[in-house]
Amino acid sequence: MAPPRIYKNFIDGEWVDSLCGQTFENLNPANRDDLVGIFPKSGPDDIDRAVNAAREAYKSWRLVPAPKRGEILFRAARLLQERKETLAQQMTREMGKVLEEARGDVQEAIDMTFYMAGEGRRQFGQTTPSELPNKFCMTVRSPIGVAALITPWNFPMAIPAWKCMPALICGNTVVLKPAEDTPLSAYNLVQVLEEAGIPRGVVNLVCGFGPEVGAPLVRHPDVRLVSFTGSGEVGRDVAAACASSFKHTCLEMGGKNVIIVMDDANLDLAVDGAVWGGFGTTGQRCTAASRVVVHKKVYKEFAEVLVAHAEALRVGDGLDPATQMGPLINEAQLATVDRYVQIGKDEGAKLLCGGKRLTGGLYDRGSFYAPTVFGDCDPRMRIAQEEIFGPVVSLIPCDDLDHAIEIGNSVIYGLSSAIYTQDVSKAFRAMRDMETGIFYVNASTIGAETHLPFGGMKQTGNGHREAATAALDFYSEWKSVYVDFSGKLQRAQIDNA
Ligand code: NAD
Image 1 (cartoon, helix red, strand yellow):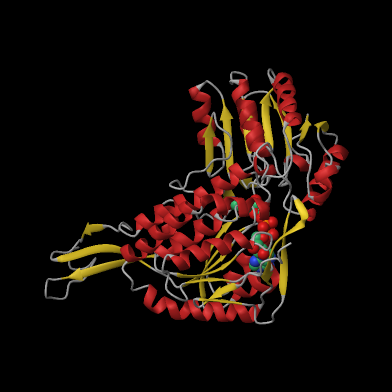
Image 2 (cartoon, rainbow, N blue to C red; image 1 turned 90 degrees about the vertical axis):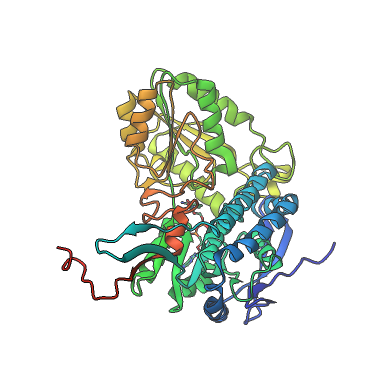
């Protein structure tokens, strides 16, 4: 067998080892005997180097015309397109999601890169009349400085791209710290940016763990922006660390998303949506449909068909084309899922299928769990309130639309929700009343597109949005510009009163 490949950090345009020389292993969650690669276990000194490089590079990058920055992003998008299949296969190997979904993850990075490349020629501001004669007013976007980007493992290339591309097109420089479970996809993205011609120091990659790399990065005095996607627990720590120096902070955190199924819904369509939303990416999407609230008139029928579909799902290695659901990311996540299943049973929810680790054959080498459905859940149960991040769906019966909306909104999160109904009035009422940043009608809770804002209400986020032009609002600051060509002193609010 060939020795495992050793990967490096990317700092100031060079591929380098961590200063302490330590490394960590990236394992395939479908087969723990398969070592995907060895990555640098970095520390605060590496962060210091990377932030210094980004700070120096910012001096010239902010002055590069945005359309020129866009040309680099266009080249990067084309390289990603050319390599899509290889990148997807490597992603499945390091993260476990089925190959079709890994292709989708790379495609999302491609879409975002093209989209933000185009923003190089837009970034439109406003011109507006002045209240004084012979005076001109406009707004322009200004870059901010060094951006710290901290990403989770569930979208190993899409999320780093969501953050890097808008940061770069606005003229910021970046230090990217990917999740320790999925450094390879971030490495591949940064390599593409290097090949596309990104100047040295503009993009830096530092691999390693949260406490040793993420924590010093968000606290670094030369970091001006922090964009974090991950758990609420870490997000709270990041927010507190940024507060003392008023760093701009964008937080995208957990979800407890809901599908509402009304009694007039197309039930086959709704079941398809619940299966895709609940078990796609093994339930490890921030937008996963972990709750399904079903009208009592159709509850029994819906539950039976959903369970039949869940039991029929083929679980296995995501590289096998027959596989419909891959493994969980690691043993810790599997233990969390198993703990919640026990909590659900103890709370009195009815286990309709799954509820156990899969064993035997290839299952013994990876972190595989059976697709799990709980029935007759009370919306106050912990399994119906807390993010599990695994293939566990809680079914909750409801009386009518008002009841469904009340249940849907009864959690601390507000990322995504969906309704299945044929009644346009019900669809619009739910659209208005659901407290989520994303809402679907007759489609599942997952499937965001890159040209629409992405993010959540309540404790899912802190009011910012990723993707679309909304992302530019985080990665730039508005500058209001007044040009007085009257040749005399003109005093706003005084001379024209
Ligand atoms: P996590 O919070 O454990 O880790 C996220 C990142 O933060 C990793 O890179 C990690 O190394 C880093 N980190 C850990 N401790 C840190 C610290 N003290 N300071 C700075 N950085 C630190 O989350 P995860 O397990 O990787 O991802 C799963 C979570 O992400 C789920 O809660 C999921 O809902 C959420 N998520 C949210 C969205 C969204 O857009 N709302 C998208 C994807 C995932």
